Length: 176
Image 1 (cartoon, rainbow, N blue to C red):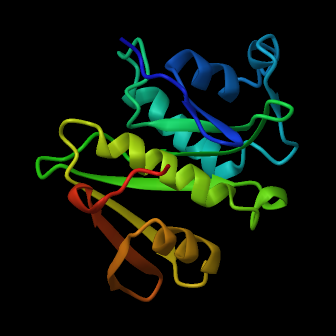
Image 2 (cartoon, rainbow, N blue to C red; image 1 turned 60 degrees about the vertical axis):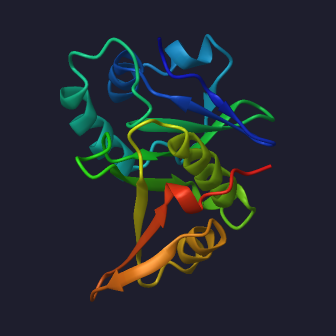
């Protein structure tokens, strides 16, 4: 059984399958356009392509998306892909996963980051082996810091480049 899309007020988060990753890496956007999905001119970003290049090898034997990989962020109005989000793999032996998200600049500061992060936190908190959700943000990325704080994540440490965040699934209250 595959992972279903997550639908929020303004967005659809669609888990990317291996075939979708291959299509995107080879510039075959018509595969998506046949389903009414179009792409913002600034997506995919280079960091997204780098992640997809890595994931195509990790997912090579997977028929379906696990949900612990990458999700396309699609704005419902216009079915426009405006970013991506996801997890950096399945839960480790301690039940810890790490979330990440990125949106094209044009749609930042409009509440989409919170909507994406909250939806993925809700999804992750319902998964059997997840106990802790982690994230990191650059020290100068005020937007990400605000989103993570608003989602109830707590700063656990920082270094010269990043702030590291965590949240126990027990502390998570689903978005209503």
